[in-house]
Length: 161
Image (cartoon, rainbow, N blue to C red):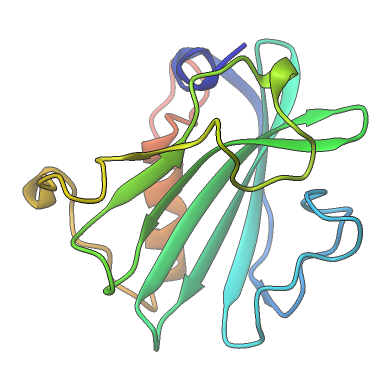
């Protein structure tokens, strides 16, 4: 399965964690050998769900002071997480963008955020469609979660979130 299939698939067993700061424990988002260090100024939350019979996780990371946001989508495998997409905003680049792969999740390396299989969309020198996405209000945790849920189409079939 690939990113497009995961996003388009019906979702089940959706759970939204609680907001925390500091390192992300491996148990919550098994991307690194140990805890995933993101810095104490960042808030994070993990959303879990099932799609196409596999467990998926989205790590939502926000830094209000730096105006940074990312929603990292990964698929669970026997040895850890395989990251399919990082959707992000930060003021050092012009607008929302993704670092994503359309490769099959089974071909990806465990615990690797970026590799030669990942492409930036839009490309670094391309025009961004800033008007396409609503502005995110930094400091609003519920909005940060809703933004990730909408981006990856995480909702139970037949329900409105």
